[in-house]
Length: 171
View 1 (cartoon, rainbow, N blue to C red):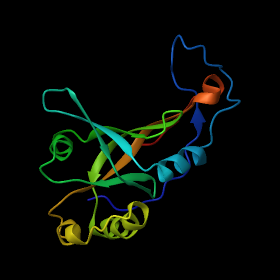
View 2: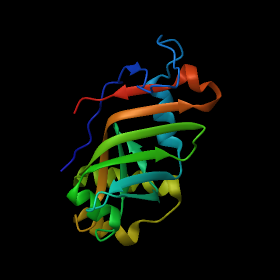
View 3: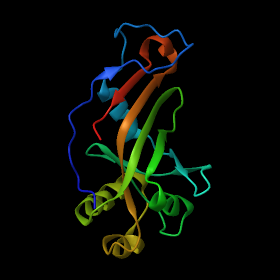
């Protein structure tokens, strides 16, 4: 079960994008703080998981960026929960494509301590009362996933060429 853990800020580098003509210099790379701000402030997120037949499944979700991971809840019988139980690799994207943050990561089932913090912070962000689901969430009957980033991309449309950034995380 995943526990909350803090991560040191990753170092930015250029993404490998052959044919785009990105500069080789590090000038203009986005700071990790830029990505975290967008991960925290986004209201809607996109998650892509992998179906058993290998095809993608993408859905809009709500969630929270907490302690270096993206957390979200879902029904245990949902397509995304079933997909993640078979293959925990997924992609989470923020809602604003002109200031995109794309997280490639691995989903883990969050532990009770993390779930309590998740429930506490979820209501103020979404103005959605989770009281009816709280008992099942805390009893581990319904999943809360923590997506740990492995690779994150930041793409700022107004300065795409100079700001395209990649951050690598330790597995």
